[in-house]
Length: 152
Picture 1: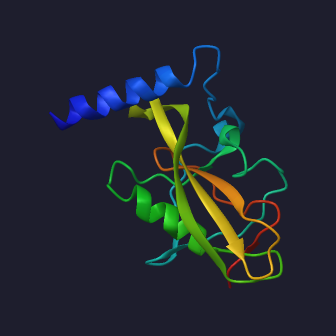
Picture 2 (picture 1 turned 120 degrees about the vertical axis):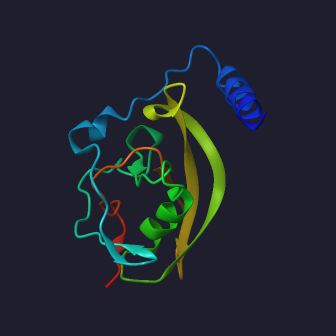
């Protein structure tokens, strides 16, 4: 019964997005698919690189791919990723999940699609919050988005 409810909700969501809207395929990260994530500790991923792509993580078309949904670790992996980030000058960040959005093509999602999670991120003295889009269905090479640094 739960599967039918999820299927119904996803169908309604896809229909409500409008038929003229293209579903992003996340092909930007195609060369980095199915990458195993490395833990720095149990609550943080090891990230060693800051992206030079100004869209990485900051647009639904180029979402961060943390994986973990098959192992029921998806939400935890999202937090592990965010815990690895700091503000532009090394400030501690705070974040909250603003909700799901943006269907994307995914072999690991329901019926070939997955929903991204949108997190709003801020730090002390930030002028505004920043949206980071995260895909917990697919796994790719993790980097910090432009404007962020990596936690020590």
